[in-house]
Length: 367
Length: 180
Ligand code: SF4
Ligand code: SF4
Image (cartoon, rainbow over all chains, first blue to last red; front, side, top):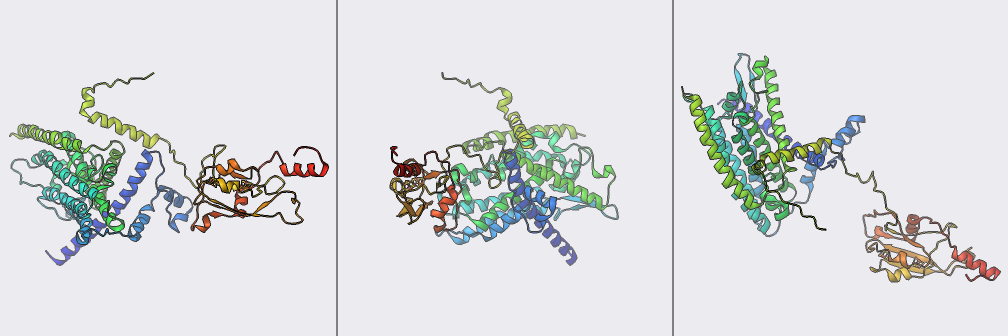
């Protein structure tokens, strides 16, 4: 690899990570706003910046919308007193939030986010690394995020965080299986006999171009995957690791200010990557409509780059909205129910789904 | 009469759970876009205060502008958390109200102690102390939370008075007769 290539990749990486972080803070704002709208509240609407806030109409509107809130939140996280309890091992206690954030930021490496056609008319995919085993990488690394949670819970050296950590690990195990199995049909379909085998996410998106999206013709896989994503990211109704009512916010009970902020950002980064993966695997990635690609609309060059990235981001935002919408609709499950759903319903369902699609694909693809 | 709500067994669709989730989602979605906001934005909007609300205890003057309190110290005595401190004083020589027995020299109510019980208002023979509808008291120091006499009168203002007890007493003393 040449130096220039490495430099380009490095710049890409910085851009991707900063965009992801930016999205995280605004996802928090979106969450707060959407919660408030669903509950008939107003939500953050006071924070204002000196000059921007005093522009006649726009400034007032932006303040009402709370768009400056993330800045205030960030500052607050930075400057609040950082309490480290005296009875913990400082090293592990500090490591935990970092370990929760790193996997979430790592997974974004293999997530493709668009494409453009260069001067020669070739299609270039915008992705940091088009890994051949991207899906495996993603599953493996994103489940590492639970180490941060478990470590945080354990090193806090107090009971509720400990229970939260244990729950997180048990939950991760029981949903990872169903999740892995539920996406097998997709990859069986992508890897048609005779083609070169690949678990790359880019190939999945390309195979959905000009055809049905996988959410449409594999709805069961889609549903199971979505439920598992909810459990994997510790979102309601599966936020057993931090449920306020039983565990006083679980694994991060003992954390404050910046370390808590890292956990927080990690969770949202996890959600964002999860939404991106759902969009890529099941919702057609950067293709605008089923049975249509941007090429069918006659756009090419850099324009298609903008449009495809925009499409993916729109789908991602849509799914993030779904995350928040579900949060204010479904009540939290009890822990035994979580386990029952994972082992007794989702796992058998995903296996049955796999078998059914094995036969369907076999008959469809039989020469 | 007790109303017994029958618990229907779930039908198949409901047991599948997914359609019910979809229905729930519709409810919250409608709430989000068509529901109205019910928040009261506090410092700008204030709730209506019901009549007879017991807010911060204040001292009031009568329509003549005389302070009604005669520093009998009943309120100080009755106040359960001992929030009130009164230093009684004489009415100054030459005042129009020499006929009134006494007046408070100092009158402090420590709002960090007050429990808004309203006992002081109940016990006051002069109707001088009133719990009015001021409900937000805040300050940056303990000293700031002690309302002194000037502050108490400023908060209390003037209330209508029907009796003018001391005026009638004075008239009775000057002209004789009457049992006031
Ligand atoms: S406020 Fe009323 S009860 Fe208290 S000292 Fe004055 S007259 Fe007496
Ligand atoms: S309201 Fe109750 S606590 Fe407060 S000053 Fe009056 S008697 Fe004391």
